[in-house]
Length: 235
Ligand code: B12
Image 1 (cartoon, helix red, strand yellow):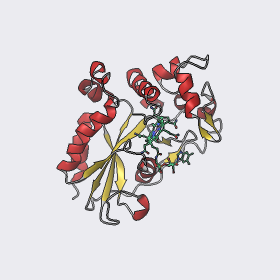
Image 2 (cartoon, rainbow, N blue to C red):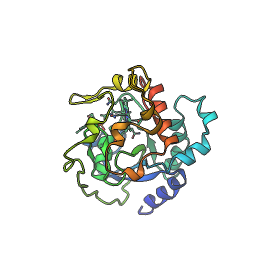
Image 3 (cartoon, helix red, strand yellow):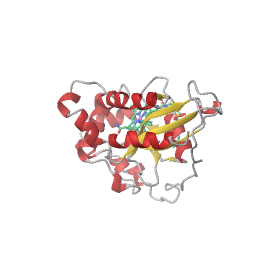
Image 4 (cartoon, rainbow, N blue to C red):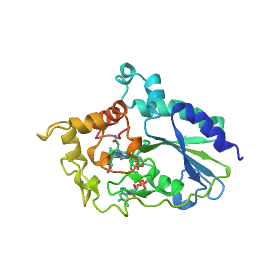
Protein backbone atom coordinates (compact mmCIF):
# COMPACT_ATOMS: atom_id res chain seq x y z
CA UNK A 1 0.00 0.00 0.00
CA UNK A 2 2.54 2.59 -1.10
CA UNK A 3 -0.05 5.38 -1.28
CA UNK A 4 -1.02 5.32 2.39
CA UNK A 5 1.75 7.72 3.46
CA UNK A 6 0.74 10.16 0.72
CA UNK A 7 -2.89 9.87 1.80
CA UNK A 8 -1.96 10.59 5.41
CA UNK A 9 0.16 13.57 4.39
CA UNK A 10 -2.66 14.95 2.29
CA UNK A 11 -5.13 14.54 5.17
CA UNK A 12 -2.97 16.11 7.90
CA UNK A 13 -1.51 19.04 5.93
CA UNK A 14 -4.67 21.20 6.22
CA UNK A 15 -4.49 20.60 9.99
CA UNK A 16 -0.97 22.06 10.08
CA UNK A 17 0.36 18.65 11.10
CA UNK A 18 3.12 16.58 9.50
CA UNK A 19 4.15 12.93 9.21
CA UNK A 20 6.96 12.28 11.67
CA UNK A 21 8.22 9.01 10.19
CA UNK A 22 7.25 5.48 11.07
CA UNK A 23 8.39 1.88 11.32
CA UNK A 24 7.25 -1.73 11.40
CA UNK A 25 6.92 -2.49 15.12
CA UNK A 26 8.62 -5.41 16.81
CA UNK A 27 7.44 -6.72 20.18
CA UNK A 28 10.08 -4.50 21.87
CA UNK A 29 8.26 -1.39 20.60
CA UNK A 30 5.24 -2.18 22.78
CA UNK A 31 2.65 -1.01 20.26
CA UNK A 32 -0.73 -2.23 21.57
CA UNK A 33 -2.45 -4.69 19.25
CA UNK A 34 0.29 -4.65 16.60
CA UNK A 35 1.31 -8.05 15.26
CA UNK A 36 5.15 -7.99 15.20
CA UNK A 37 6.46 -7.79 11.64
CA UNK A 38 2.99 -7.36 10.13
CA UNK A 39 1.97 -3.87 11.22
CA UNK A 40 3.02 -0.27 10.52
CA UNK A 41 3.13 2.68 12.90
CA UNK A 42 3.15 6.22 11.46
CA UNK A 43 3.68 9.19 13.76
CA UNK A 44 1.81 12.45 13.28
CA UNK A 45 3.01 15.62 14.91
CA UNK A 46 3.45 19.35 14.74
CA UNK A 47 6.54 21.45 14.16
CA UNK A 48 6.78 25.20 14.53
CA UNK A 49 3.43 26.99 14.66
CA UNK A 50 1.80 25.68 11.48
CA UNK A 51 -0.83 23.79 13.52
CA UNK A 52 -1.79 26.85 15.54
CA UNK A 53 -3.98 28.56 12.91
CA UNK A 54 -6.16 25.52 12.01
CA UNK A 55 -6.56 24.74 15.72
CA UNK A 56 -7.33 28.33 16.67
CA UNK A 57 -9.87 28.54 13.85
CA UNK A 58 -11.62 25.33 14.97
CA UNK A 59 -11.32 26.11 18.65
CA UNK A 60 -11.13 29.89 19.18
CA UNK A 61 -10.24 31.26 22.62
CA UNK A 62 -13.88 31.57 23.73
CA UNK A 63 -14.52 27.90 22.98
CA UNK A 64 -11.20 26.75 24.49
CA UNK A 65 -12.09 28.30 27.83
CA UNK A 66 -14.77 25.70 28.47
CA UNK A 67 -12.72 22.63 27.59
CA UNK A 68 -10.16 21.02 29.86
CA UNK A 69 -7.88 19.74 27.06
CA UNK A 70 -8.96 21.53 23.88
CA UNK A 71 -5.94 20.56 21.77
CA UNK A 72 -6.26 16.92 22.74
CA UNK A 73 -10.01 16.99 22.03
CA UNK A 74 -9.53 18.63 18.63
CA UNK A 75 -6.75 16.20 17.73
CA UNK A 76 -8.97 13.22 18.48
CA UNK A 77 -11.84 14.72 16.50
CA UNK A 78 -9.76 15.30 13.38
CA UNK A 79 -7.23 12.45 13.47
CA UNK A 80 -9.35 9.42 14.46
CA UNK A 81 -11.47 9.63 11.25
CA UNK A 82 -8.29 9.87 9.15
CA UNK A 83 -6.94 6.66 10.70
CA UNK A 84 -10.29 4.86 10.35
CA UNK A 85 -10.67 6.00 6.74
CA UNK A 86 -7.40 4.27 5.89
CA UNK A 87 -8.27 1.08 7.75
CA UNK A 88 -6.13 1.88 10.79
CA UNK A 89 -6.55 3.23 14.31
CA UNK A 90 -5.09 6.12 16.22
CA UNK A 91 -3.19 6.04 19.51
CA UNK A 92 -2.64 9.26 21.46
CA UNK A 93 0.24 10.50 23.62
CA UNK A 94 -2.11 11.79 26.32
CA UNK A 95 -3.86 8.46 26.85
CA UNK A 96 -2.76 6.99 30.17
CA UNK A 97 -1.29 6.43 32.61
CA UNK A 98 0.34 4.16 31.74
CA UNK A 99 1.48 6.32 28.84
CA UNK A 100 2.53 4.95 25.51
CA UNK A 101 6.25 5.39 24.78
CA UNK A 102 5.87 8.17 22.22
CA UNK A 103 9.37 9.54 22.74
CA UNK A 104 10.87 6.10 22.18
CA UNK A 105 8.76 5.75 19.02
CA UNK A 106 9.73 9.28 17.90
CA UNK A 107 13.42 8.53 18.41
CA UNK A 108 13.10 5.33 16.36
CA UNK A 109 10.93 6.84 13.60
CA UNK A 110 13.21 9.78 12.84
CA UNK A 111 16.52 8.80 14.43
CA UNK A 112 16.23 11.58 17.03
CA UNK A 113 18.09 11.90 20.35
CA UNK A 114 17.19 13.32 23.75
CA UNK A 115 18.35 16.82 24.62
CA UNK A 116 19.67 17.40 28.15
CA UNK A 117 16.17 18.74 28.98
CA UNK A 118 14.64 15.30 28.33
CA UNK A 119 12.81 16.38 25.17
CA UNK A 120 13.77 14.93 21.78
CA UNK A 121 15.78 17.44 19.80
CA UNK A 122 15.07 17.65 16.08
CA UNK A 123 17.99 18.76 13.86
CA UNK A 124 15.71 21.19 11.96
CA UNK A 125 12.88 22.02 14.39
CA UNK A 126 15.00 21.97 17.54
CA UNK A 127 12.74 22.00 20.62
CA UNK A 128 9.71 23.20 18.67
CA UNK A 129 7.90 20.01 17.78
CA UNK A 130 5.65 17.44 19.44
CA UNK A 131 3.66 14.29 18.72
CA UNK A 132 -0.11 14.36 18.27
CA UNK A 133 -0.90 10.74 17.37
CA UNK A 134 0.39 7.40 16.13
CA UNK A 135 -1.56 5.73 13.33
CA UNK A 136 -1.37 1.94 13.46
CA UNK A 137 -2.18 -0.24 10.46
CA UNK A 138 -2.46 -4.05 10.53
CA UNK A 139 -0.50 -4.28 7.27
CA UNK A 140 2.93 -3.23 6.06
CA UNK A 141 3.21 0.20 4.49
CA UNK A 142 6.42 0.86 2.51
CA UNK A 143 8.34 3.23 4.73
CA UNK A 144 11.93 4.52 4.58
CA UNK A 145 14.26 3.25 7.29
CA UNK A 146 15.22 6.34 9.30
CA UNK A 147 18.87 7.33 9.20
CA UNK A 148 20.33 8.40 12.56
CA UNK A 149 20.46 12.19 12.58
CA UNK A 150 23.52 14.08 13.84
CA UNK A 151 23.34 14.84 17.57
CA UNK A 152 23.43 18.67 17.78
CA UNK A 153 23.97 18.49 21.56
CA UNK A 154 27.24 16.55 21.20
CA UNK A 155 29.15 19.61 19.93
CA UNK A 156 27.33 22.09 22.16
CA UNK A 157 29.91 22.89 24.83
CA UNK A 158 28.00 25.54 26.79
CA UNK A 159 24.63 23.76 26.98
CA UNK A 160 22.69 27.02 27.51
CA UNK A 161 19.48 24.99 27.94
CA UNK A 162 20.78 23.76 31.31
CA UNK A 163 21.74 27.19 32.65
CA UNK A 164 18.90 29.40 31.37
CA UNK A 165 16.01 28.35 33.57
CA UNK A 166 15.47 31.24 36.04
CA UNK A 167 14.66 28.75 38.84
CA UNK A 168 17.05 25.93 37.85
CA UNK A 169 14.23 23.46 37.29
CA UNK A 170 16.52 21.29 35.11
CA UNK A 171 18.92 19.46 37.38
CA UNK A 172 21.23 16.47 37.06
CA UNK A 173 18.53 14.38 38.74
CA UNK A 174 15.96 15.47 36.14
CA UNK A 175 13.23 18.00 35.57
CA UNK A 176 11.72 19.48 38.76
CA UNK A 177 8.13 19.97 37.68
CA UNK A 178 7.00 21.61 40.96
CA UNK A 179 9.78 24.24 40.82
CA UNK A 180 8.88 25.08 37.21
CA UNK A 181 5.17 25.31 38.01
CA UNK A 182 5.74 27.56 41.05
CA UNK A 183 7.78 29.86 38.85
CA UNK A 184 5.16 29.98 36.10
CA UNK A 185 2.48 30.68 38.69
CA UNK A 186 4.55 33.65 39.87
CA UNK A 187 4.95 32.40 43.42
CA UNK A 188 8.77 32.25 43.57
CA UNK A 189 9.35 35.99 43.73
CA UNK A 190 10.82 35.87 40.19
CA UNK A 191 8.21 36.60 37.58
CA UNK A 192 7.38 33.66 35.30
CA UNK A 193 5.83 36.04 32.74
CA UNK A 194 8.51 35.67 30.08
CA UNK A 195 8.21 31.85 30.05
CA UNK A 196 4.42 32.15 30.13
CA UNK A 197 4.24 34.65 27.28
CA UNK A 198 6.93 33.40 24.92
CA UNK A 199 7.66 29.83 26.03
CA UNK A 200 10.08 28.06 28.36
CA UNK A 201 13.35 30.03 28.62
CA UNK A 202 15.44 26.84 28.84
CA UNK A 203 14.01 25.53 25.57
CA UNK A 204 14.34 28.96 23.96
CA UNK A 205 18.05 29.02 24.90
CA UNK A 206 18.73 26.13 22.51
CA UNK A 207 20.33 27.47 19.30
CA UNK A 208 18.91 24.64 17.16
CA UNK A 209 15.73 25.32 15.18
CA UNK A 210 15.22 28.92 16.43
CA UNK A 211 13.36 29.77 13.21
CA UNK A 212 10.65 27.34 14.27
CA UNK A 213 10.06 28.83 17.73
CA UNK A 214 6.35 28.71 18.61
CA UNK A 215 4.69 32.07 17.97
CA UNK A 216 3.58 33.92 21.15
CA UNK A 217 -0.14 32.95 21.08
CA UNK A 218 0.81 29.30 20.48
CA UNK A 219 3.53 29.37 23.18
CA UNK A 220 1.12 31.09 25.59
CA UNK A 221 -1.46 28.39 24.98
CA UNK A 222 0.92 25.52 25.82
CA UNK A 223 2.39 27.24 28.85
CA UNK A 224 -1.07 28.21 30.13
CA UNK A 225 -2.36 24.67 29.72
CA UNK A 226 0.75 23.25 31.31
CA UNK A 227 0.25 25.50 34.32
CA UNK A 228 -3.48 24.70 34.55
CA UNK A 229 -3.04 20.96 34.33
CA UNK A 230 0.39 20.34 35.81
CA UNK A 231 -1.01 17.62 38.00
CA UNK A 232 -2.53 16.08 34.93
CA UNK A 233 -1.02 15.79 31.45
CA UNK A 234 0.01 18.88 29.51
CA UNK A 235 -1.44 19.41 26.00
C1 B12 B 1 3.73 12.70 31.70
C2 B12 B 1 4.22 13.72 30.69
C3 B12 B 1 4.63 14.96 31.17
C4 B12 B 1 4.62 15.30 32.66
C5 B12 B 1 5.85 14.80 33.39
C6 B12 B 1 7.14 14.83 32.62
C7 B12 B 1 8.33 14.41 33.51
N1 B12 B 1 9.48 14.95 33.22
O1 B12 B 1 8.20 13.61 34.38
C8 B12 B 1 4.49 16.86 32.63
C9 B12 B 1 3.01 17.22 32.68
C10 B12 B 1 5.21 17.61 33.72
C11 B12 B 1 5.05 17.14 31.22
C12 B12 B 1 5.51 18.36 30.84
C13 B12 B 1 5.95 18.67 29.56
N2 B12 B 1 5.92 17.88 28.48
CO1 B12 B 1 5.41 16.03 28.57
N3 B12 B 1 4.68 14.30 28.42
C14 B12 B 1 4.27 13.44 29.31
C15 B12 B 1 3.74 12.18 28.59
C16 B12 B 1 2.21 12.28 28.49
C17 B12 B 1 4.09 10.83 29.18
C18 B12 B 1 5.61 10.56 29.40
C19 B12 B 1 5.79 9.11 29.80
O2 B12 B 1 5.74 8.80 30.97
N4 B12 B 1 5.89 8.21 28.81
C20 B12 B 1 5.96 6.78 29.08
C21 B12 B 1 7.38 6.23 28.77
C22 B12 B 1 7.39 4.72 28.95
O3 B12 B 1 7.62 6.58 27.40
P1 B12 B 1 9.08 6.66 26.72
O4 B12 B 1 8.91 7.31 25.39
O5 B12 B 1 9.71 5.32 26.70
O6 B12 B 1 9.83 7.63 27.71
C23 B12 B 1 11.14 7.39 28.04
C24 B12 B 1 12.04 8.40 27.44
O7 B12 B 1 11.35 9.61 27.25
C25 B12 B 1 13.15 8.45 28.43
N5 B12 B 1 13.59 9.80 28.81
C26 B12 B 1 12.87 10.74 29.39
N6 B12 B 1 13.61 11.82 29.65
C27 B12 B 1 14.85 11.55 29.19
C28 B12 B 1 16.00 12.32 29.19
C29 B12 B 1 17.17 11.83 28.64
C30 B12 B 1 18.38 12.69 28.65
C31 B12 B 1 17.16 10.50 28.08
C32 B12 B 1 18.39 9.94 27.47
C33 B12 B 1 15.98 9.73 28.11
C34 B12 B 1 14.85 10.27 28.67
O8 B12 B 1 12.68 7.86 29.64
C35 B12 B 1 11.30 7.61 29.53
C36 B12 B 1 10.91 6.42 30.38
O9 B12 B 1 11.57 5.25 29.93
C37 B12 B 1 4.44 12.34 27.18
C38 B12 B 1 3.63 11.70 26.05
C39 B12 B 1 3.98 10.23 25.93
N7 B12 B 1 2.98 9.41 25.81
O10 B12 B 1 5.15 9.87 25.96
C40 B12 B 1 4.57 13.87 27.05
C41 B12 B 1 5.77 14.43 26.29
C42 B12 B 1 7.02 13.69 26.71
N8 B12 B 1 5.83 15.80 26.78
C43 B12 B 1 6.16 16.65 25.87
C44 B12 B 1 6.31 18.06 26.09
C45 B12 B 1 6.58 18.91 24.85
C46 B12 B 1 6.23 18.59 27.37
C47 B12 B 1 6.37 20.08 27.74
C48 B12 B 1 7.57 20.78 27.13
C49 B12 B 1 5.02 20.68 27.34
C50 B12 B 1 4.73 22.14 27.42
N9 B12 B 1 3.46 22.44 27.64
O11 B12 B 1 5.51 23.01 27.25
C51 B12 B 1 6.47 20.04 29.26
C52 B12 B 1 7.87 20.19 29.87
C53 B12 B 1 8.62 18.87 29.97
C54 B12 B 1 10.12 18.95 30.13
N10 B12 B 1 10.76 20.07 29.98
O12 B12 B 1 10.72 17.93 30.37
C55 B12 B 1 6.38 15.99 24.53
C56 B12 B 1 7.86 15.87 24.20
C57 B12 B 1 8.13 16.09 22.72
C58 B12 B 1 9.60 16.02 22.45
N11 B12 B 1 10.08 16.96 21.68
O13 B12 B 1 10.28 15.15 22.91
C59 B12 B 1 5.62 14.62 24.74
C60 B12 B 1 6.19 13.44 23.96
C61 B12 B 1 4.14 14.88 24.37
C62 B12 B 1 3.85 15.18 22.93
N12 B12 B 1 2.58 15.42 22.67
O14 B12 B 1 4.68 15.22 22.05
N13 B12 B 1 5.00 16.04 30.43
